[in-house]
Image 1 (cartoon, one colour):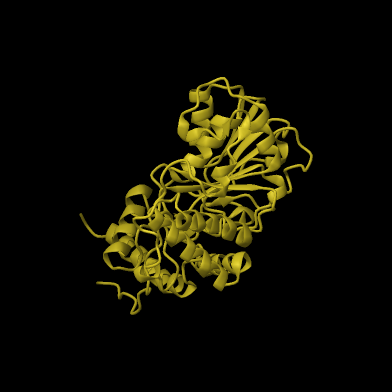
Image 2 (tube, rainbow, N blue to C red):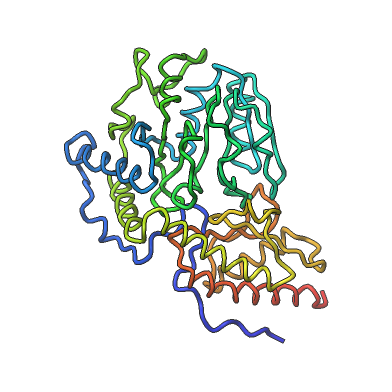
Amino acid sequence: MAIEAPATRPANPRFSSGPCAKPPAFALDALSDAALGRSHRAAIGKDKLKSAIERTREILGIPADYRIGIVPASDTGAVEMAMWSLLGARKATMVAWESFGAGWVTDVVKQLKIDAEVRTAEYGEIVDMGAIDYDTDVVFTWNGTTSGVRMPNGDAIPAERAGLTICDATSAAFAMDLPWDKLDVTTFSWQKVLGGEAAHGMLILSPRAVERLETYTPPWPLPKIFRLTKGGKLIEGIFRGETINTPSMLAVEDYLVALDWAGSVGGLPGLIARADANTGAIARFVAAHDWIDFLAADPATRSNTSVCLKFTDARITDGAAFAKAIAKRLEAEGAALDVGAYRDAPPGLRIWCGGTVETADIEAMLPWLAWAFETEIAALSEPA
């Protein structure tokens, strides 16, 4: 007997964790002022790039003496630029509790081959950040995009430290309160919390990071795309919008539109509140259903953006196949798109809850999740 499907679908079923949903009511004509066909080195291009930097500073509350640069190759490019340019001056500590953090470990240990201690935790757990030696250079993700586990705060990071902290904050920026005094290098991409277009990354440097760049030369060759200094001095132009390679002015315009929208909903506090409301709706659903749970074991470390869920029903014998069937069924019904767990993560679902997602859409999607679960469970008991 068929299980009755819910009557209402989300107005926007896009719950992908990257690229993420565009801001509500986004339309392509919002990009009509893009400087298309113009050089990014012309006055109009420079003005828009500089505006993107300063609006980012304003909304995120980044200190005036921190440099903000737009760099190529998304968050990956920004992290790699930082690691290749800054690491090697002292021992490093590589911290990972999900796949992207593990990727940074591989790059440092196997590619740069520097002296590094590796601290890891299983998916759903987090490394004890209070047990780390901050006289080393520490590389970590603030929010585990593929595990749904985040840093609860920056309290474990000492204000006085000899090493640098290099933080991949790509699914945390614009949704979590980042303690800038505890972060020397921070990176993120446009396509996460604000739903911007891909290929552009942000690199934020503290004065301590700038000092390292100007006093240390790594022993390995640096490709042009990674070079942040010239003649022992920071290339200041990068942090005034003079990008290393040609940016997409269409993507720049899209980011500016997203920043304007962020300001219209209350800036960072408003964005955090929206993400918290979305995650709260899922938390209530999980509390009401005993067959599903958060992958993150500790509520204090549960992400409010990339929410990862696992199925706990004992009748499920093949977790990967079951989760894939749920995601496929939700997509076929137009109830939720791109909600399967990341390929390296444990089987389950990953639902993006950043501020561009409307809570009403989360609430409309969850009955469909219950329907899909009941439908797939019923199918398990059918004779072969």
